[in-house]
Structure formats: C-alpha cells, structure tokens
Length: 285
Image 1 (cartoon, rainbow, N blue to C red):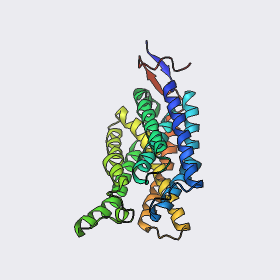
Image 2: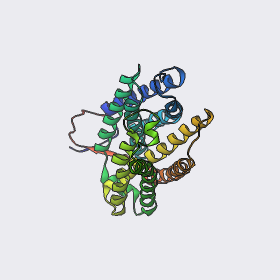
Image 3: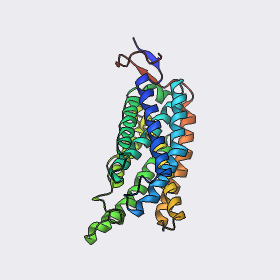
Image 4: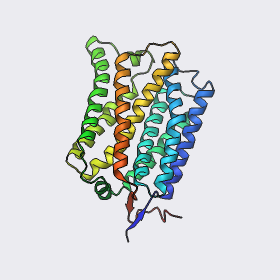
C-alpha cells in the first residue's frame, strides 16, 4: 500500500544529530582555540563560516525540519537545501582544517547530513512537486542557475588557469599550504555541474528539475552568505578581500534568496513525499 508521509523517523533523528554536531563544532570554533594549528590566512574564513552556521544554518535546519515533519512541502524542500549546506560545509572542514579535537565531529556531521539529504531526496514525491509548481514560468530559475554556474565557475577557473599557465599554484592553495583547494573540487566537480543539470531538467519541465532546483537554490543562497560572512571577518581582521569575489558572491546570494523565496512560495504548503515499502517502518510513530 502507498501512503503519504512526511519525514521518516531515521531521517529526523539523523538530521537532529547533524544540526546538534554543527552547533557544537561552530560554537567551539568561535569560542575556543580549536584552529590553533591552521594557517593564519584560514582563521577568518573558518570563523566566518562558523558564524553563519551557528546563527543562520543551524536554526534554518531546525525550523525547516519542524515544518517538513508536519507536512509542509516548502519546509521539506528547504530542509533538503539546508542539509546540503551542512554536508558541503563539513566535508570542507574535514579536509581543510588541520587535525584537531573536532575532527570526528566534522566527519559525523558530514555523514549524517549527507545520509539525511540522500534519504530525503529519495522520499520526494516528484510528480506532486511538479503539480504544486503548476504552469508558473520556470525561466527565471533556469537563468539563475546557469548564471551561478557561469559566475562562480569563472572565478575559480580564472585562478586555476592563471596558475596553470604560469606553472605555479593558485593563491588559495599556496597561502594555506594545502595540496589542493577542496572548494575548487566540490564546486567544479559537484555543485556547479548540479546547477547546470538542474537548469536543463527544469527547462524541460522534468520532475527532477523541480526537485534539484529547490535544493540548489537554498544551497546557492547559503553559499553566497557563507562567502560574505567569511569576507566580513577577514575585513575585520585587516585582510584584503578580492572585490570580484565580493561582487560575484554578493550578487549570487541576493538573487538566490529572492529566487528561493519565490520558488518555495510557489510550492504551497502541501505534503511533500510519498513512499512505498522503503524499510523505515512507520514514520509517524
């Protein structure tokens, strides 16, 4: 028998655990010397990310999960997007930050948020999501996703290609002493291609286009806010912040926040997911 569900219990538990670990990690990052082994250039970035995580991301995960668990389609999509932020953030921390007392916290936060994200996507009612959006125009969301992929890709590729031509390494790698920049890897290998795929599918009004777009719009908003938060801390510490990066990510953040609000408003409050014999038991217990 097929039944309508909200968020299965294992995904609720893993999400709460992930946001609790994120709160611990970001709070410790802001209040202790956990980054004492990191290069000085990384400290403002880490503190800026921790500030955004603690003040914005953790509450956003909690609120969106609360609404999703009560049947809100908007809450469900927002919950998935904020989980994407946590997974991205703690994949980065686990590979960039010098080994410290929170390493296992980073790994656990990454694993739990990724598990919750994949499980949540697997339970999406794709057809229902498309029906909820209706015949509203999709081109603004298509255009935004292509623009994000192009703008952010241009920023990273300019740095990488310049270093490749000169036989050096990018400044973001040289300054940190790391072998590579994991942000380049995640953005160019996963996130930006994801925007392109989502834009293509949405332009064709494929059900997966609506699902991926909803998740990635939230991710785009938090991505831009994270970079701006890092830039703020860097500026307060007296470090120079590249103007093109501020312009690109400021624009990305503003447009993504507007697009996210419009997309979620279009979805309405209906129940988001359906499942059939997925092995989680009764999710309402």
